[in-house]
Amino acid sequence: MAERGVAALDAKPGPLELDLSATAMLVVDMQNDFGATGGMFDRAGIDISVIRRAIAPTARVISAARAARLPVIYVKEELRPDLSDIGAEGSPHWRMCQRMAVGAEVTAPDGRPSRIHVAGTWNTEILPELTPRDGDVIVAKRRWSAFYGTELDARLRALGVRYLVVTGCTTSLCIESTIRDAAFRDYICVLPADCTGQPARSGSSYSGHEESLKIIERSFGWLSCSESVSRALEGGQV
Image (tube, rainbow, N blue to C red):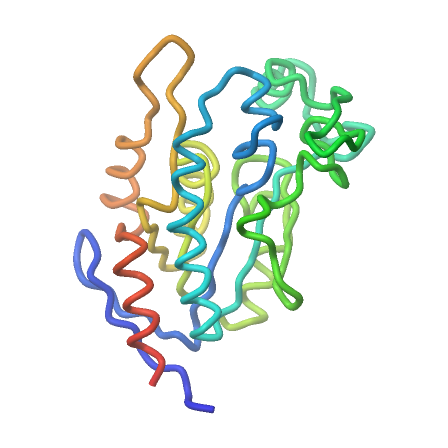
């Protein structure tokens, strides 16, 4: 089998070369609670269409990453059934969980009993269009950053990873938080902008998506698109 090479990527703020022997792909929070009818966002009246639009581009990049033999790491946001990790009463995470009815018992679209944002339920399963394969890594997180309180950093270092292709939702929360934390640890991140999304706030057209993209490009990583990243990964298979 041919050795993995260097992927030359058209990106902003400038071109980026990915050493494919030191690159992994992150798929962050692409789960039913955020992107499926009947999930937490949908039940709360949040428009999930922007997250749905990110599914096909993300699947395209996952396919290219698999062809390039990159590790594919899924990150799921979920809480323990007893909600012991929800956060101190009155804290920002606790307040968000109250607004979103985290822990509430619901019936999944397939008829199964489920609970909002709780581990081991339909709500926190990966979206079926992006189902992990055997050998993929799955990391559970309790807060917005994929690095906070998780084994992600240790797993990446064990794999010799320096470069990250980051995908998922939502742009201004979990994606920006994850890329910021990655930059603090000296990982080099590229975000295909069509592989993320941020629903607008209720009653407003503002989402924070574009602002987060600008922040990431200016200080914490690189921006590209699914087509360019897939083409670069395919071109790096030498």
